[in-house]
Amino acid sequence: MRRIATATLAAGVLITTFALTTTPADAAVGFWRTVGLSGVDAFGYYNAEATKVTLNFDLKDTKKDGYSAALRFTFTGTKKQKDDVRVVALQGDRVQDKWQTVSSTRLKHLYVQECRGTWSKGTFKTKKCAGWRQHY
Image (cartoon, rainbow, N blue to C red; front, side, top):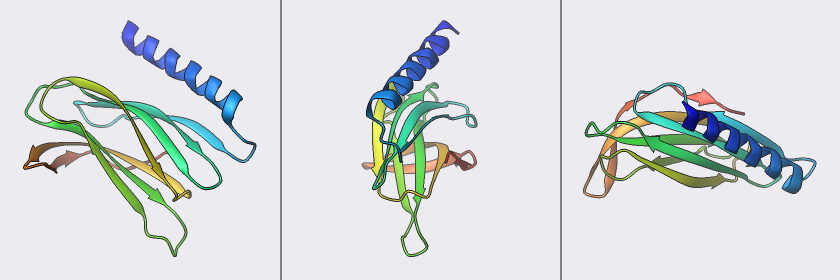
């Protein structure tokens, strides 16, 4: 419980510092956390600027059960732009924790989905996912 509180406090301090020191007037900064799928724990912050959005996040696989933790991100843009979909998965079946960064030029909305899956011949195969959640 102390680790969760410490991580949340550290993320809050980081976000506040980041927002106060580097954000232009037209940028949006926000915090998000996963809530849906057992074995996947992730949180992070996004910084939406005029031309791109950058998402920094911590992805944790909390179970050693044969599946790897993953996140799917969908960044939406205008009607003429295709959605930008990214999948970030941890390698191997072990309890692990890793900070990562994803960015996109699609600025309208960010959707996140927690998933579990397996690796086969260098390709991640999704086995189970929670629902999509809109974060901005």
